[in-house]
Image (cartoon, rainbow, N blue to C red; front, side, top):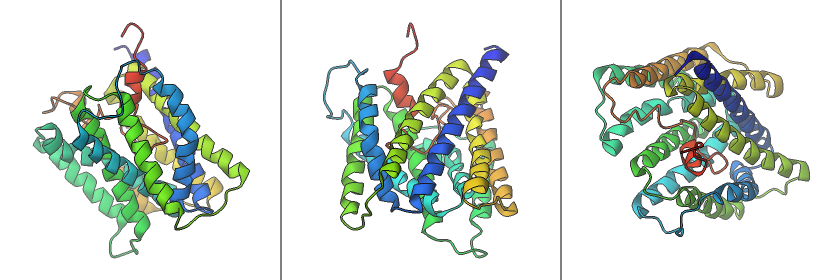
Length: 320
C-alpha cells in the first residue's frame, strides 16, 4: 500500500476520532445536568431512525433470532454495561482521565484473545501488556487519590468494549449485522428505560437535540473509520485512536475547566506506548495469526457508536 493511501487513512481516522471526542464531550456536558442512563436512553432512542436506515442495507433474509444465542447474549450484556459505564465515567471524570483508562482496551483485547480466539501471545506482547497495565495503575493512583465509581465505570467500559470487539471477531460472519446491532439496542432500552423509573429529569428541547447530535456524530465517525481502514494499513490507522486525548485535553480546558495533570499524562503515555507496540507487533506478524487488536476497530461501543466492523458488513467496498 502506498504512502499517500496511508496518509489518507490516517487523516480520515483523525477526523473520526475528533467526532468521537465531540460525541463524548456532549455526553459530559449533558451528564452534568441529567443522570447518565437518561442521556444514554434518549441518545439511543433518537439514534434508532438513523440506525434503521443503515440496517435497511442488510438484504440477507432472516429474523432477530441469533445463530449463536450464548455469544449474542454475552455481547449484549457487555455492550449495555460498557455503554452505561462509559456514559457515567465521562459525566463525572475529566475527559483525558477517562480516555487514558479506555486506552487500556488493546491490552485487554490481547489478554482475552487467548481464551476467546485461541491466540498465542508471545513474550513481547505480554511485556507490553504488563507495562501498559502499570500505566493504568499510574492513572488510577490507588492510595494517593480516592477511587470512586467513575474510575470503576471507566475500567468496566474498557472491559466491555474489548469484550464486544473480540466476540464479534469470534463470531466472524455467522451472524447478521441486524442481530449484532439490534440486540444491544433492545437490551439498552430495557436497562436504561427501567432506570428511568428510579430517577428522571425532564429534558429541554435543546438538550434533546444534543442527544440526537450524539447519535449522528457516532454514526458519521463510524463510517469515516471504515473509510480510513479501507484507505490505509491497520497498523497505521489503529494508533490514531490515541489522538482523542488531545481533543479531550482541548475540550476539557475550553469547556469544563479541566487540566491534564502530570500523573495522568505519564500514565497515558505508558498505556499509549504499550498499545502502539502491540499494534506494531501485530502489523509485522509477531506471533499473531488473527491480529485481534488491529482487526478490532477499537472504540468503546455503545448503541450510539456501533462497532465499525459490523457497519462495514452493511457497507461493502465497491466490487466487494
